[in-house]
Image (tube, rainbow, N blue to C red; front, top):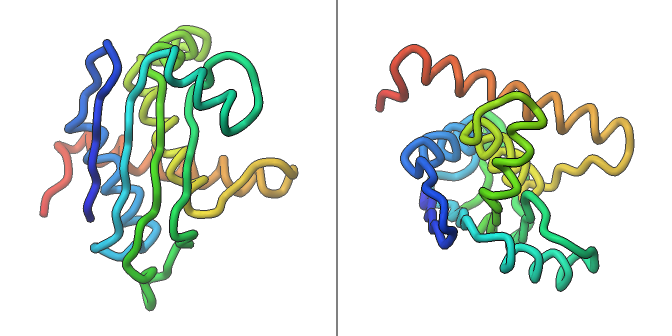
Length: 157
């Protein structure tokens, strides 16, 4: 996988953990090894600008996704074709505030947001109740399997 992570925010982010997480998510969804994903961390100001520009909503948000090639999850028999998944943009400051509300660590909240944003790139949505159930169940499954791998000592290749 070609996963590029850029931290343009003023907060430190465990980029190595995010790279492992993104690799895990893409592997679990049978995304082609040559697919490209960009993850960008930005401060509140730039996130607010993106939120207004692309969603026409005021204030910063936690995560935005910008799909490119509209790739969809593959299967064990057939991975997706190579291509550009797109960009996941996360605001660590918003994630930190949400982490307090949700009773989790900031990196756990950021991991959730990266997973959530990546699922949006792959065509998942949560506007309708059934879509919401499917997306959030998959999100929880991916985060749990990643946490288990991390607990056992990380990914081995």
